Length: 351
Image 1: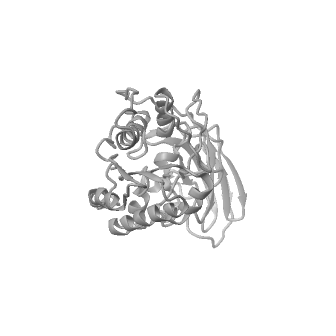
Image 2 (image 1 turned 30 degrees about the vertical axis):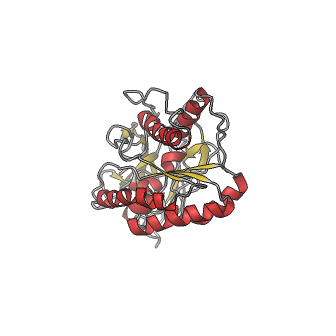
Image 3 (image 1 turned 90 degrees about the vertical axis):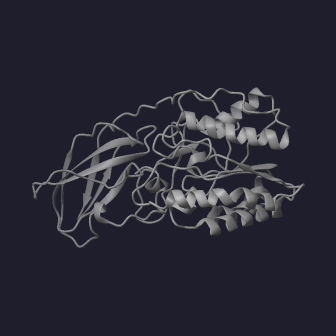
């Protein structure tokens, strides 16, 4: 059970894959279960309201991941998982839940530390309604690189992480143990991520090792400790530039779209008002889709171009395409709209 850190982005190996490889190498009879498979691939079009529906994405080229099943979703919240978990356990009958949730609850302001801890307790109790002897490995919240618009996030995360082990110990029973997994202590957001939060290939190993070692110590007397060496440096995933952009105009609305780039975490959209003679203005955040609808007041002639991004990595932009919009009374330009932080997991992750 997890969010984007466990779901993975198209082109990732994921820590789930590293964990499965470790168990296979140790001869552990482990089978993953859940309703979904694959990583997250960005949707074709960014919605104006609500969370973006994502495609099932692929893993790093050449990666064979049999039995790839999970219950991790990009943008996942403990606030949502607590209401879903009983049905999920009843449907898939796991014997062990590996849980990495909570960052989005804290970063988006859905829950403070106290509320999130209460939801963890509710999550455990509801899961037990479907299986009384269920075992749990519950991770604390990883740290991320600082965000200027969230100056208090590190303090909030530290408060939650400090209290979590005690809460989990109180929830634990001999029949249904609840074990703490210390991710924050081993995960360096500066070295182990590609964007300040999401794991690179080194971070994937570190998360897998933390879960494997906690599992081994709690349930197998330390005999299944993580045996795979953690690499010293991350394996990069180069991305290519979009092949071009297309613009379809209807009145005051322009639908801008571009070909999918494998492994891209978002796309920077640059817009220029030709009539005003201004330079290109960049979207405040990467667009989390392969297209968007742009509505502008007043009409006029514009130019747009797009570049692909994966964290801090950015490609060259496409050739600019010119288009003309009719005068209308639609909402302000995309770049001036307030950001809804629940729309995109990466709003709080890649700025």
